[in-house]
Length: 359
Image (cartoon, rainbow, N blue to C red; front, side, top):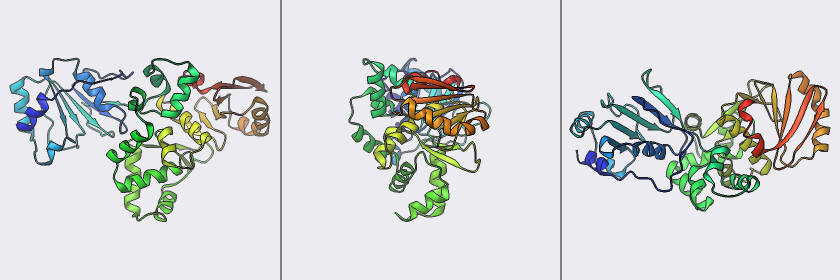
């Protein structure tokens, strides 16, 4: 009971917390999941703080006091009854730690990855920030300044709300969330970001640089995909190929020399489509194509004349793919032109991102 008393008396107030656009519903059972450092704990605690603290219990299974102490289901249920607790949060919970979850009015499980908890569980995925959320976190600056800030800092909520050195935060994040083997793999994955690559190719590249078994690297890559640390985007023209997308464009640049500005910019666009739940595939070297046959073409600094020439050279391929419109995503350029029935519209990223729900 000492461990439960410790968590019950713990101060769960948040400092400098900025509300997210995601909210926790008053459902009886909820799985809150998402990639590391997406703000899951803060969202759960912010929700708890809307209730009388005597009615809530937050248990963090990563707390060091678990090193020599343990809790059992019967003790938790007894504690809940004795203290009339209504809301229980199990953070960093290992599935099946309890044979049966404690009985309480509302239980929230916080996890890195999705688990099938049964029909009675609802789920909420919390991603890193998209541009609109990042924008809402900032107190001043015009669109160009905020876009440059977004490009520099990336999508971690902690960097958007605190005056932290980016490099210092990234180092702390990596060291606290991953072991040595995983850190090495993250560097490999960062190197191949925005490229079409197989797991076997990743393994071959990795084993030339450090000692790793095939089984382990496949297991780690599978876990990273489940946790939203990497995404795979299928090829519109070759279903067997998949492009690797890393989960944060600023962190990927920190990890690898291979990530030049065009690749970082492309990552930012792909992640925006993913976070807005737009169904899309990559279209060779020409960007991404949505279900509505809108082509999203990253061209941060390309002039209208250069894009116009490329468009004419590639136009037969666009027609074959039944492209209906081409969005040219730039840093700050605007222009448009038409070839036959296809409209080509160039927009700065910060203008395009607010309309990409309709793609």
